[in-house]
Length: 337
Figure 1 (cartoon, rainbow, N blue to C red):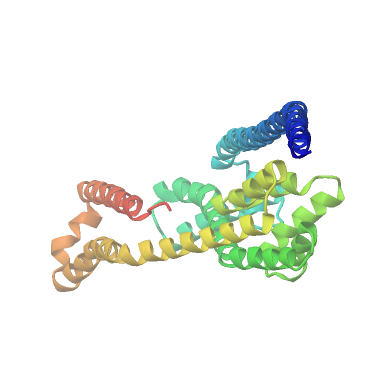
Figure 2: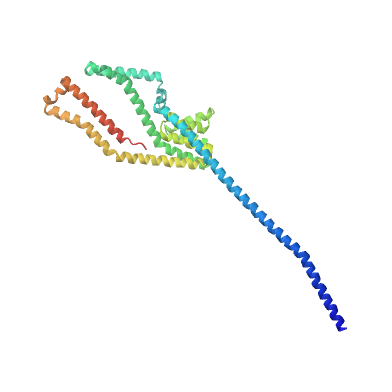
């Protein structure tokens, strides 16, 4: 009986082991296959993720390259346009010069005033009793030189007043944009409340918008009536931001800071060149001071310069050379920023 129980136990143990081995053989292969499949899935997912990341990186690099290329093309196009404008602004027609000076006079009126100025100068020469030889030259200078000098003086003074107020106007536009207003509302705000000539220039932009021009096109035309580099910078910034995108308030803020830095640099250069200017004034005034002193102390010594033809030639030559020297010194003092 005991032997029979041992045999049954042995058979049961053998059957259990056989069943376990069979189950392991069947299920182990399936588990291994499932583990291998799971590993392959993980590899596929990882490779898909890596491919997606690589594609995203390539797309981002490609987008950056496209944007950089677009900005470069825009800048190149604007540079070409700016060169054409600069060539036109170096010698603008008289009509444009009058607009840049802020004068409401027409070209015909300017010529009438020029003729009147020439007649006044000629009459003054006759009244003073100067030789009639200088009458044509004086009339020509009064009719051609004096009116154009006046227009150039008005242009320069208007540009100076514009540059004094332009950075403040840009700051107002930046604050308006950051507070939620669109760009054209900020420009309209300047056109209503800023002092002249900034108000007039921004009013032209608003009027150009009303007849159908876009803000970039209207801003790029500002340099036609305000021939200074700062107005050109404003038009370039607006056009680049319009075509390439970006933060317009930050761009205008940077432009305002650059304009203020240029202004400080100009003031520093002016202070450093003041010594040269004083030297030029002293050198230019010295011949007249010496001539006056000699005339007071010994008139007979200097009168031949004024009473003889040889003396007149010497005076004319000395005046010409002195004028050339002063012009050279002036060019040396006029440093461009």
